[in-house]
Length: 139
Image (tube, rainbow, N blue to C red; front, side, top):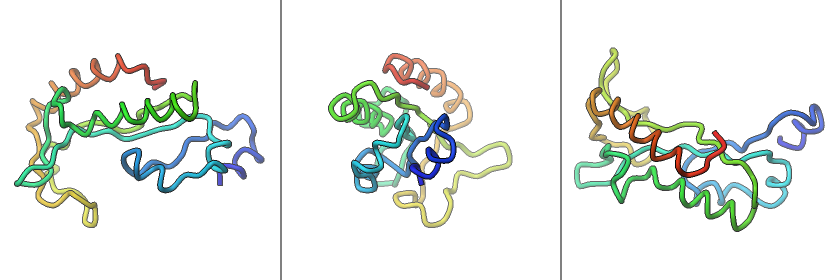
């Protein structure tokens, strides 16, 4: 699809579809895909796995999944030096605004999540933005 997009409009910025962490992305990409990409992207949420299930945590937590950004940065430096990386989704789930905290059916690892409060979500968003700003992501 990326080749077709570039053939139709060489100025179009093409990013891969992103479904999870680096390992999952690498299982879907090969060198023929990478040559048509203008940037890499990822989604990073701040979760840990506990006996209660997927649990929202502060962004500085040493086991937080938000740190998968570091793996993508190392991959980029090793395999695609200079390729921009966009963080196209990040955050925390919380019940509020008319929504509960139940993830969509069929999302792996999402049974019975332990979400953060709306107040924690707001605080973590600021702290997460500051933490991520230091990493050198393009967006």
